[in-house]
Image (cartoon, rainbow, N blue to C red; front, side):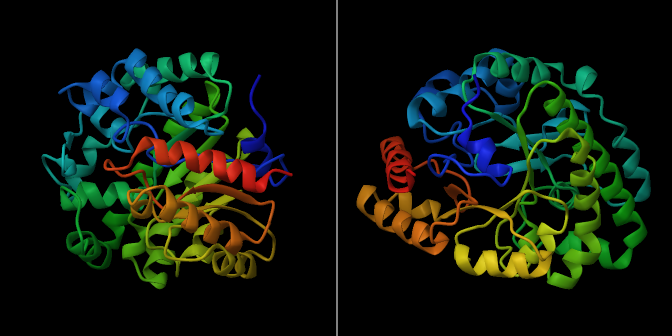
Length: 345
């Protein structure tokens, strides 16, 4: 029986308490994860359905969160298709041959989840059978995935990406269209196998000005999220440093908008709802670095987040980005209990 608070709130309803989950809750901070992973690569772990299943379940057991998120990576489809992407420890996604010309797009053929990455589907099946909370599926938004493909690795300034957008917009839009198709195939496959919600990560959208975001990123994200409308599952959207973009991002077609730690929830809600003309559920937004300082600073920060939400029922508690490797898992367990107790209705 699926636990209801997470899905109830995500759909705009109410629950007995504010649901909690954490981005990157599966993995890095957990000693049981490190023991299981050993020295192998993350791509090898993702390719093993049993490891993926166990890693996804670990934070649910440890923290008592209200949802699980599939242990995977936004670059997994491209790796599975043989595009030449590796996840390098301490760096992130590294692309052997960055995309620079139209001929490079030939590598981005249609993605077939059951053929290219059947292990992901098997892990989803196993998780849906075992979990007593909803499973969140996810994909990378076209802009963020494209930035890795163009830059060749994580970038602070996204210099090559922005140059391509402005000097060859036709190539840029074709690249984003192909990546949108891959994201749609990824998310629809996960939902068809039982994922109860999906999150589209546009992690680096905050690198864009509002006008560039609306021109170069929003259309492809809107197409991805729109392609999930008929599934009936709640759609989440999130990016880092996107305080000035929240109103635009929410128009892509979402039920839940993620907010990073830089924008208080009351301000985020005002910005988004004034742009949409309707209410929306917010997710966030405790600064993940504060959690590494221990329980008391974390408790104080959680109180601030809850105060900024001001009792609004449309809130899913999360960090403002992912769990950091240095985090004490015990603090996150306390945090889940605290939020549940403070918000119990």
